[in-house]
Length: 396
Image (cartoon, rainbow, N blue to C red; front, top):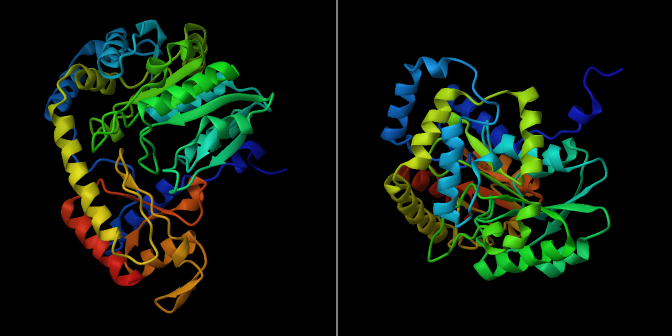
């Protein structure tokens, strides 16, 4: 008899966290590694948010358990913030505060899926979507998209994949790992398809504020109100406010689903850290000046990365419209010799670049898109320039 369950044994390690951990280990050994792997802002959390956390530390009320679904004042603030940013009217009773957006997603899959239910996930996808769906007993149906179609799935493709067992679609815009932003018309078309198909949608809105070049964030249930009874919205403070380590996210769902998620969370974690919740309250209730400053910096870096990647033969990198990633197609570089070694996969290419250039990228295999790599441009300008120069030197 094995020591661990088959369910846990079948989980793949997060490749983004694995790459980041390997880069940190090499740095601790004195190796000058530049990491493009982590999806994490390089900015400090804004001062007014940190000040709110300091104040919360001294408040005795924050030293005790609080409601499992979140502080009432934070749930109300999330409802107000959602109306402001998404145009979606939300009752605070529909909100559950979680230990990061990843926790919200896990809760949603657990609440919606029974064994054998099918989950449609457009690929490339964020690495945790399929693993979490499988943990809930779901069967993942990946829908491949390409750089040629802008990494966008269509209602026709969704309909072709639908079966009587299809229960959930995972929809993300702006996207990790591609940076794709669906237009409002495309969002509406997918939402109407979901309504007609009678399926649920889990929509991840974590990158809502990070859009560029006139791209427009559109919230699926705001664009298609008829979908609201079958929609779970996932969001959090991590990307927008540079708060990845604070671990505060949330879900917004119909009351029956929210009640189920709340019951589940009461047995898993109880409340999110009260100090972090108070910090999140300051974030979602406060001004967006710092958010805009960070967005402008990401935009500048985005254009610089695109400029440098365009000069590498055999690398096709669509200019992303959102988030802080580029997702180059490197298939034309595979099967050839790079620095005296034949590279046959994006996994091998990333291993070579880590070894030869001391640059950490994430291979596309983990995102359901072999032959691609993901680079995050959420790192300092100096590291960005140096890291890209190293990549160019190896691949030229």
